[in-house]
Length: 336
Image 1 (cartoon, rainbow, N blue to C red):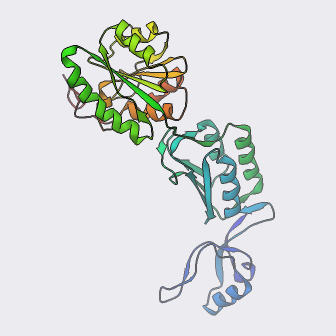
Image 2: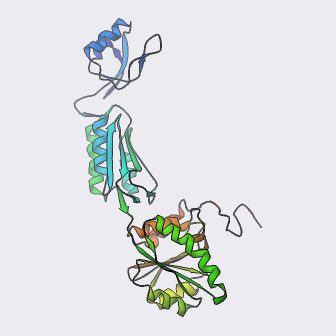
Image 3: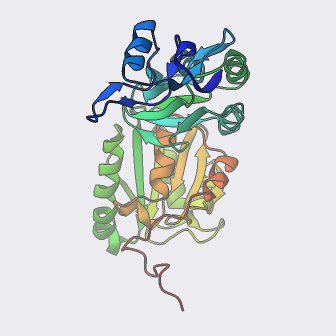
């Protein structure tokens, strides 16, 4: 593609680079217009002798065609393309779910050629149907077709660059452990906030189970809920150590611990594990807070059917420092 100022006689078939206005400030031609011989005659009548245009060669693709081809190849399952127009293609969610981004492939694509760009929402964002998840924008009026082929090869050789995992309607069990004296208080403090979250994500919270706060009792409660799709365990006290009551109970029940201590704050004391294929979450106290915390990062992914690994959880440390919530006994803004 050639770009620059040319004499009017050389501008026929070129793409107008900038808006043109008359002496009264009215727009004569918009940028991006493919200039015809009649257009050139009008410009000459206005006293213009030169104009800035982009001139595509046979080896180039128009911005809209390039954006459409790139959008089509990076949009994976449950991601839809709208457009293109003015060199952009909007990629949207086909339904509510968790966005997955192949970040290494995305970075390779964005590094192929100046002006070929893809901007996405943060990986693992929970998005609604119709919500925009990415923008493909071709900045110049045209790009070499070979560079678009490079994009297509990278995308086709990778797992989907962008895909959405829809939220599933799951049956979620809530186990609350504590003393008999704290039964009413704990059930009240945990049940309603958890119910609002779970139902807000399209799943069902089963009637809560209350049990004594010891490893054997909690293990028994976990085994009893093995038919649920997801098990949450909330207790009278936080999980302080991998040998604490809730992790010990999960092991006694026959499960496994993926990680205790997720690098997201609020919520670092969360425990993630599995009983067979059923996720078991030892919930931190911030599950009671309506403000964004580790629960909002983990549960939607579990409700989309993803099995979280230790590597998945450890990677949450990048960006995992969230805002303080009122329930924290010692906000980060205060020091000893």
